[in-house]
Length: 473
Image (tube, rainbow, N blue to C red; front, side, top):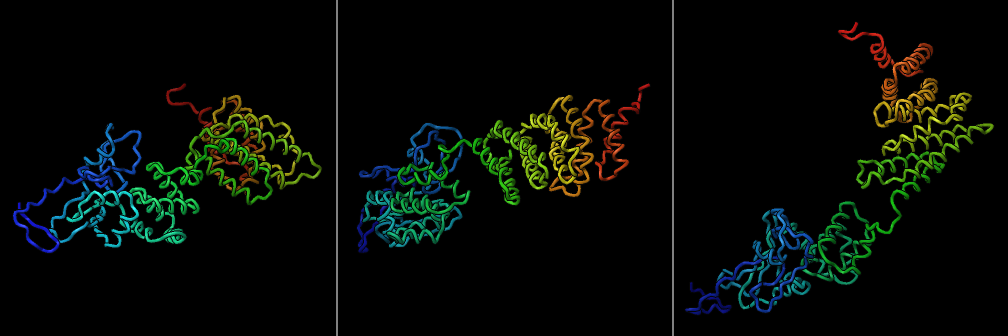
């Protein structure tokens, strides 16, 4: 093969063009055949390396999951996709050309000014170009770049200096700054790394941006002095344990006096404590003893309020609302069995219910309603003796207060309550069922829809008790 390349266009006969060197990876390490090159990779070596394919600077994607114990730079060099090649255009240019090729096939060729910017600011490019013979034309192609805009924006940041960097980053926002930070880490643009970290630390993040930052900080080994303020924003190692903190927050809510704020905070805490919540990492992350201490405190306050000469319906309603909310938390966490036992043994409150006006007392049955629904749905598992004691204590008050609950449900689903009362009643022994169904029959015949409609459950009890099955005599 005989070709000639000179800048003056002179033909040099017999000159054999040097063989094109083998292509090599764009991990931003130097050409392994360059004598003065020192391979460099900004990517921190993972603890368990898997077979990887290079797609773009600093980004890798798995091909297979078989773990291998190889050197990461050697591993990247074996995946030869992007390349640095000697020009094949017969010497039409000297120096080098930089081509960025996106995953969708789009291509950007950097201008002379942009190439100068990269070589001046990037340690990786500086080392890469330093090992080349610029008397011949070379092309650096970065194949499979995920988002060319981030690379071009990084070059834009290179043009800025001093205070202008922060203003420039503020215009593109946190997501753009994170993209630039990733590219800057890949090409070792130190000023860009420092500027992006400084800006991102002072700006608010979305949850998606936070996850990107966490991933990026795990991928690259950055100066801890630069990253410590960012890490402190999502590191919880030194905070109070979540279970104790949760009890403290719940105590603050139950002692609050603004009913609208309490309802909003109820919703907030319910979302955090929900077992399906994105915030809940440990379902057991709740101080059971602390919640039950709060229950006892609320019950003591209730007794004091009922014993006042003129009981305040508003304050009693607030405390019963708190108690009902605590019971819902305990039941949701599947630790509500002891609360049923606690509610069964409130003899003083039951006696207060008998002598109090309906406007004051009916909120007690709201607490009972939560337990009835949980029993009917099988969320609480207590033995038959405890179930009977609960019905014996609170079934009568529920029959009296049902009409008031219907008029002021406060989110209580009345049809579900009726269904669950019937289902829970059918879990008792047949003789016990007969006693409570007869009590219900009497009250329902007098009050109608002011009493829960248990006709379906009554029919089941009647059939089981008196209608013989096929084959029975």
